[in-house]
View 1 (cartoon, one colour):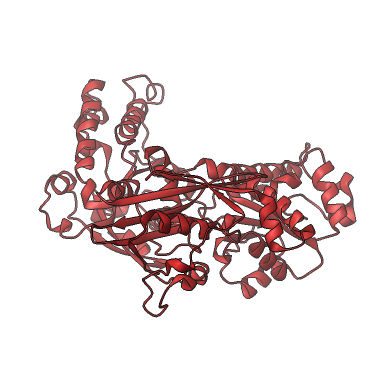
View 2 (cartoon, rainbow, N blue to C red; view 1 turned 90 degrees about the vertical axis):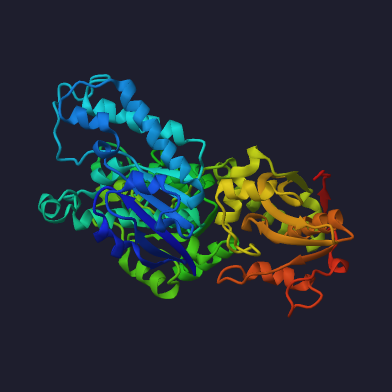
Length: 555
């Protein structure tokens, strides 16, 4: 279980939040410490301060705008200000944040906002360069602009926290007693938000939503009510809610979350509803896997996950039926099974507020993920008619193109490193800056692999990073491949390229076992001269599969 050291640096008392943050969640653990209260600038400016005795994984920087930006405090007191002075002070604060780059792998900067109870002059608050809200917006925009090139800095939206909690966030009594501005409920909400962000950074976000149909994607039972009596869209508030729910699912799909169906139904009737109802947002093409039958849903879910080469821990299961949800919870405890609201008009809000799909970036591969799985169904269909596995693989016309890492590929490379769990040799996690710095060192090489076949382009789905020395020794540090392209010999071709390029070096590769990366071990264990030593590869066992066209690459 990965341990992450988190340091809280703030000008308000956030101590009550520590107990909500500390401890284990998913495959992560947070160890939380607090810097001295209300000494933000002093700590950021002092590189020798005791809080920096060891590098932190995460720095949480939470400041009040009136305390770190003096000109903004003048505005709160209704004094005249110059917007240029305000923005200059924001720039100075950003410089302090940038100076802390080497002290933490990730820096979370909480955006500036005022407690929701605070009322300024409403007829003036958005007046340009004068109103409180307008100036605060410009400050946050400047903060974002100045820090945008620093990928390890993540700016968090505190306004969302205030609006989403839907409970009291500010506690006047606690502030009077101990300078604690926020309520217990607010601290708990924010802590859960922070945990979801950390989970996304380290590849623990959910990747697949498996949906029921009746009373989940539409109102009613299609087999009993018929397509004309289903509630979906129209002027009916229930039907409109289901349509909005589908729109939210489609938005998740557009950013890379995979959708699947698991429903007890007659398949022809259900598919007719999906394809023919005029108000359906999601069509058959939007689902990467479909199980519509009368079988046990737990068995169907296992089949879907296996078909898509994902782990059970990557799944969210949505079903209106409490007994079906309980079946999945009992049979497959790794799956996240939230309880849908009793009131279906709350479905759209419910799905939009799920915090398990966090990601630090959205790449082209994310946006094309559903298309790739639809192409995979075509590959599987011709596999049924192939005379042998070899014949099927040859028919795919797979092309593998290696690319030397550059700045344009860096975001995707780090995403592969941080999100891939099953086919991942060492499960090392990096920030963008850290991995680029590593790749720039002499004798270090990072290669991304682009995969395509006659059905389409899967994008950059593999990565190997390797170092070599003058003494004839090469070492593979990272060997990562998306589960989407497993089982086609691509991993063999990736390793062949590296072994060919670094001959006559001895090549070592050390497998680091996790709970999830056994698929990688099943592959690599056959390549070792001595599996017990788990390091030196047997180059005599590495071949280029005949069905793969490997293009040239100069390292």
